[in-house]
Amino acid sequence: MEFVAYEEACERSLMSSSYSRLETVLSLRPRMQPDEWLRLLGEMWTCCDNIGLYRLRLRSLVGTDGPIREMMNEAEHVAYDALPDAITVFRGCGPHNMLGASWTTDRAVAAQFPFLHRYRTNDPILVTGKVKKKNILAVKLDREEFEVITFSARKVSVELLHAELNPAS
Image (cartoon, rainbow, N blue to C red; front, top):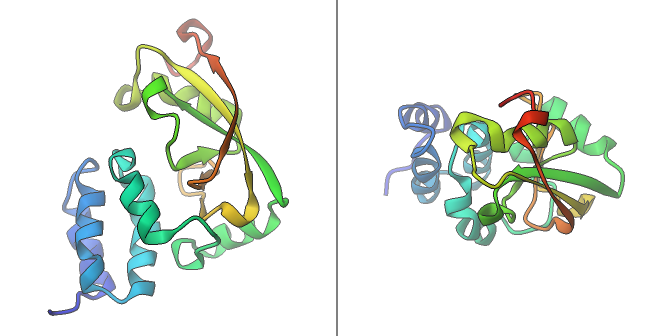
């Protein structure tokens, strides 16, 4: 089997739509060096719109213990290192996808998600969770969402969101 270099993997991934990109990244895994594949996964993470479809597969591939340094750039390393041992995280979603891997430390950011066109749901909710720092795989800062990637957030509460109170709607 021929190995794929990081740069070529990036090009192939970016040729996919945001809905098929993660599938492309996953298909490249056996053909890349492990550290380069993790770097690719981190680089493409926020450009993927259907992470939930691959949640269990991703969890089996990357585990639940962090940090995975290869998935973060230098600024994200600094942000991760500054986190306390346990943090509150938020996820704006619908009842069908409360267990996602993408969370944020910013309540207002999370509250907008179920009202955005590509994530819109008929039953918008805001899930509040707690997660230990050691269970955060990576922090992503590129869209100013302070995204936290984890498969281990423990649900603390769920509240209904109302469109008329949300500026994204």
